[in-house]
Length: 348
Figure 1 (tube, rainbow, N blue to C red):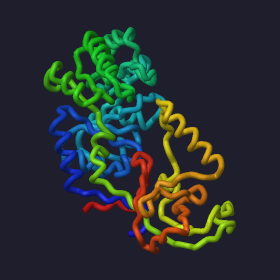
Figure 2 (cartoon, rainbow, N blue to C red; figure 1 turned 135 degrees about the vertical axis):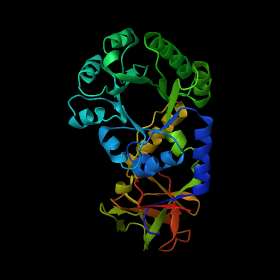
Figure 3 (cartoon, helix red, strand yellow; figure 1 turned 30 degrees about the vertical axis):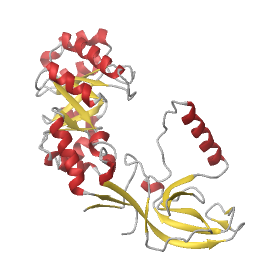
Figure 4 (cartoon, one colour; figure 1 turned 180 degrees about the horizontal axis):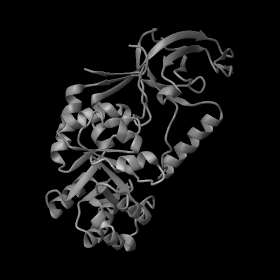
């Protein structure tokens, strides 16, 4: 194996997916972006394998892509955009459910012609991203006879406290007081969702799930990179594109995986505590000085980048006091699956 490789323990992964799907009635798998590292086609196949008939994607283009591999209903999560011809085309497909977050778009959808478009109406949450404020929900009365309203969608923040349950209950009650339709949630803790689903009754609640479903059994997933070359280096010798001098004797280890694979790319994280802020400050200072810790583990330790990663390979420094790996060895590497592109995916 050469390249950045994701190896999947098939039995363990499928057991996790099946257990979660059986435990959470109304679950709607989410497949968007890079497909959580697996690819959209693979997640469409897995949704079919689970016997689920609804799949959520991010964009109209993703809906068009998965149609070939999934024959159930497809929900587009991003708000419907009337100026996008692809979005208009998808809204006319009886298998597609679009998300409407503005009153003007509900009006346009209602006058689209043909069969009634299938629509989820988004309620504005404390995220303040998309959706109708509670005081505007009543306005759907004028368009509900011209639309197939599949439910209310409530996209909650990821704050990890009881406030999500409180907000979900408050907004859900407000929406149901206007129109009786299923409530679709994102980021509602599973226990809170199950309690709400039991209260609402069968078929009245749905829970969209991405990360917890596909990446919720990390022990089933292993990412490795291949050692491509190893070169001894003396202190002061220059290395890489940017010709930085080595700080000490050691080795330059060339490993597979670079920016094209998502190595060295990281989504911003929220530093909530003094400790996490201090870590962020220290890390930023090191990077400003030209030092950055790589995600590659050699002999049980994360090792420093020699310079920023290249497109498809990276240079990692190893001190002289340890024995270097051999060309062809596989090294553990930590990546975020949501931004990773693997050279190969292997099911074992």
